[in-house]
Image (tube, rainbow, N blue to C red; front, side, top):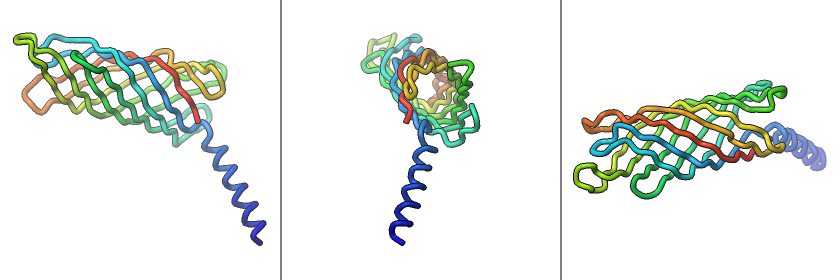
Length: 177
């Protein structure tokens, strides 16, 4: 009896592990953003490091629907920190040898800049949404090159400041589990 339960458990575990393979991806990117309408300063570009995780929960043929959680940091002044979570739709058509995707996310952006009038450091915080799309190129069975990711969005500040405009460009490596 114990042997039957053990064999059944191992079989179920191996089936679940095979089903889960490739459903999680972790990525690290070089991230560049352009911020517009930041109070008391001019528009500015930042460059830094980003990272995230994608959890695919509906793989149907070549289509994957999942959740994506990401963040980035660009230290110093002018700099920014971001954190987003959202829905991601990806396609992996075997003939194309690329994996295009689109994603809609909501989250947080905190900017650090220099006041154009008096030289003081200025911090602003925004509730933000963004839409990004990109192309991943498979390098091996479990590693992709994030060739390009491009997107944009808007941030909302609690003060009477204008809405933040955000453009983002990313590239990096993706590891699938």
